[in-house]
Length: 304
Image 1 (tube, rainbow, N blue to C red):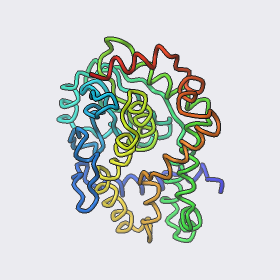
Image 2: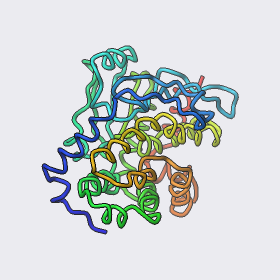
Image 3: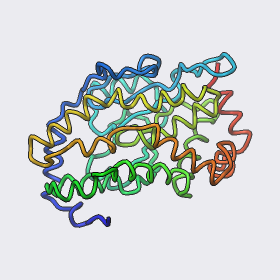
């Protein structure tokens, strides 16, 4: 269903959504009873007040019996709401570069990253296949019938599967992922952080690729991917409740397939990799343009 750009850019819509989002506390606990995963205890979560899904990608074991080095690569959700204390925490990570996967409209409405002085910000937009526009439009409509038509009956999950498919099929997306992995592979480079808005889809796919490249077992890489559900659960639930209380949505649970990561989404991307490239190695080399030297450099730099 085509989305109305006028609805997206409507001042009233933007104000309503901003008000609803602002009602959600910036610091949401990641502890969710009944939703613990292996990754939730294995990963190094970095607690911040203005972001809930910031993690050190190090610490995972590899097939060779080594571990991914800590303090070199970080994954995150949006950094636009960081407090002064959060910025000080990031300064302690000694980051050299932050890669922002958000598209311009996300930056326009949510705001630019707040970063420590001296950190280089690199914009590498990866299309979300219209997800952000979809969310703003459907929420801002305040129309429960339209919201059901756009997101109900499995449509939201189907939309997310298309987002993940585009990570493989879009030349522009592949170029951004490839450039980021090349940055990480540079010997002696300062620590790097990459992020999108929720830190779960574009960021999750990049993290899955990186962990797989350096020899982390598949089930560990998948666990890291799914851990976003644990770290984001409280924040996302509060957002849904706020949308209901402010009258923007009668049934905010329609958003759950868009807020969550699911193994089926990852499997959709991997099926596209197999279909288009025959396997992950060719996707990395032919699709992302990473030569064998870069792949070896990633392993040498990140694995103890």
